[in-house]
Length: 555
Image 1 (cartoon, rainbow, N blue to C red):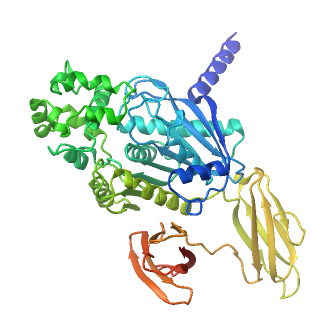
Image 2: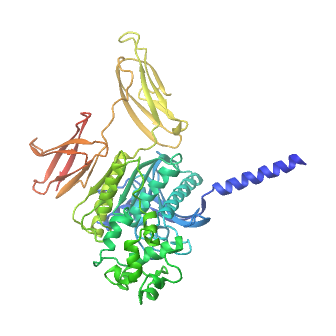
Image 3: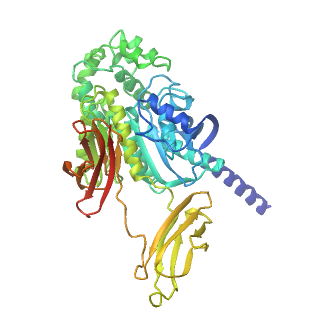
């Protein structure tokens, strides 16, 4: 009887554990896209497939999944989207895109909002991409906790988990050793919050390859508050009641009895109903005064300005993202004429992170563009940076040679050590030999085709010399250039070269541009005054002396 009771308890425990550990609740197909479809989407974004090529089609799914509620006191079911590359067998790197501000409940990725196109395009370049809707959006009920760091992070992380579980169910192989996190505007704040949450609480589960927040309010209770609270007109005054109502729903203490304690008439009664998920930000902004502080009760405004324990100020501080030290690469992107998110958010964050010892943080200025105009530059750089760091699963861990007993003896060997991540791999050599060891060879050039259990195929060529013991000891410089072809300028991104020399030569070998970049990891190369033609760009790492050459076409 005791044994039977124990077995029943064990079965219950196992079932309960599986239920608790399962993130994915349900999924449904959103669409199947060919490579041509994705190229059409690129053109709609104003980008040429020549500048940003796609390599494969993709398949998009709506997912619902378990995630903590905004107060962290229980679980709820959220929605989002997941996009997988098609016919991609080399273990797609993972990505997560956090969308920008919307007040429309269904203007989110799982309902195929415009921003799902970014997930489609990233999948078309070999990334399995998760796109969370956030709490209070899509299928999740209740108030959206706008710019709430914790719930944005947990919704993003659990969307990634749901993507991993769906990949297993669909038989799709992912490279779980790579995760790129990015987002724009509110999504920039969400992306930074997600990176912080992973580092502090989930570092054993996820490896963040690149954290790329774009035009986000990271210094929420500092630079961004000062900007909105300046007493001057603000481009999007509706953000103030949006964040206020969302934070009160989470913390419950921004006012005691009625919102009229914080907002003056008529805004105390006219604004709250607008945040029901059916009005866009244009409608909401038009219902607000151009100066945000004009809708705030004078006593509440005075307390906010002078009392560090004001509940709204404390909520802003709780969701500011200045109080951590990123250990992963972080690339913040901004433009100096951004009228919605003050660019000093990125500048202040970079200074704070570096002062506290963050090893690899940059805030990159893309020039004098407004919030909408900055978007394309950020996305282009995001693509370039992610691609320069992207790796399919590496199926080779080492390659060694065995010396001949004497030159020309024909008893040398090349031995490949496979990565278990590749499963059961096959090796076919140019000599028609098979297996991971090629024996009985003399000096010469040998090619091997390696195919993983999942269908990924790579071809390697080795120049064997009995004096060589490690044949894969040369590291390639990681870089990306865009746009290419160009008319006015190209941006050269080199995320792991601190001190770089860039030289540009025309077709006749004449040096037409020369610069040194120290700690920028990016260089803007002017072509406006150059004649149409092919130019050779020489990039050199001044610390390691490694160098590479690439071509740029000036149209």
